[in-house]
Image 1 (tube, rainbow over the protein chains, first blue to last red):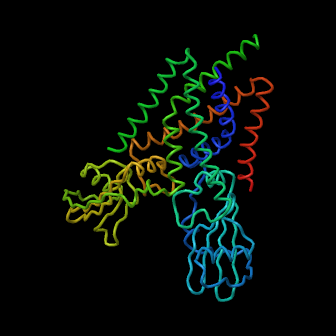
Image 2 (cartoon, rainbow over the protein chains, first blue to last red; image 1 turned 60 degrees about the vertical axis):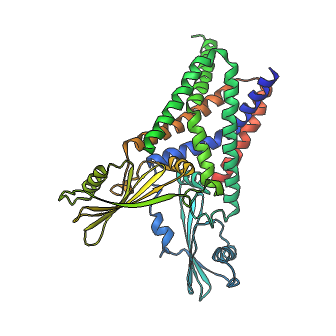
Image 3 (tube, chains in turn orange, red; image 1 turned 90 degrees about the horizontal axis):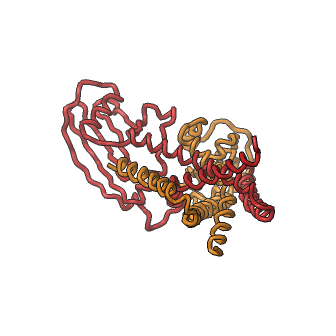
Length: 207
Length: 209
């Protein structure tokens, strides 16, 4: 019975702790799957080309030339007082374009490498896009530069913790279910339905 | 109506739904959880693109005089007996070549069809199980913008529905869990409050940052 109580407590606390994360990931999964919100918008144009709109131009000192593109971009961002995840760095001898994202914002920065002025354009997004940002970060793309903002790194670690907790919560849930004699038959049926569905779907999708 | 009876019934059913739904979705939750980890990390053992097995071959098929993109793509896919989502069909400038991708979890076919000769060049890439898991995590319905650029197979649509079921199911499990938490004794309630508030504080901080 002591064993049961320990598992019950672990399941109870991990479950409650991860419940807000579950809401974030479940709601954003529904949005990603159904496009209630046009989350893709014009991301390709935004990502690959400097936005002609400019909110302000801020002067910066040229960083040391031996820096990598990412460090060069980080240095400029620090000087112009903008924080966020650098989504890409496109640099030639006269200009540097950096699309920057953070939950609720996407910022286009075009740094003129001859005059030392960074032209900034910032767009605010909504709550749904914030949820999608959180769902997809850090993610598989741009692996060589992804996680260049402390916030993204911390969020990435929290997501790992969330997954470990949800797996742990699932295992403790199974252990607890084993203690409930009256729920065993229907529980086994539910488990079987889930297993058969996923196996059949994966086999079907793969072939 | 006896409120105690109603309350007891609610507790009983919340508990049952929490257990059965959790068990039914268990394998989906594990798959999406683990594949989420794979997507967020670039572990050496789970590399799939670098470890793909690629083969190239040609086939010749009879292509009808149809020149409408959607119909042509489906005709070629059917004649090649391929299954999967059709992505990014494109005509060459002179409209003689039609290229597109057919993708399903674990496999991707890059197709280039010569519409005059009926010759099809196929590049087939097979991925390992880690690649398959990543593919399963990212299957979704095409967006409005992708209409005409992406066609979902029937099974992929069913898989998308299962993503909805898992998402809604998890929300129901959460709500049921919260209701059951509200019914526990005072001491457990306050301990639970610490856990749920810590989760909410972290999430709200990141949402409002």
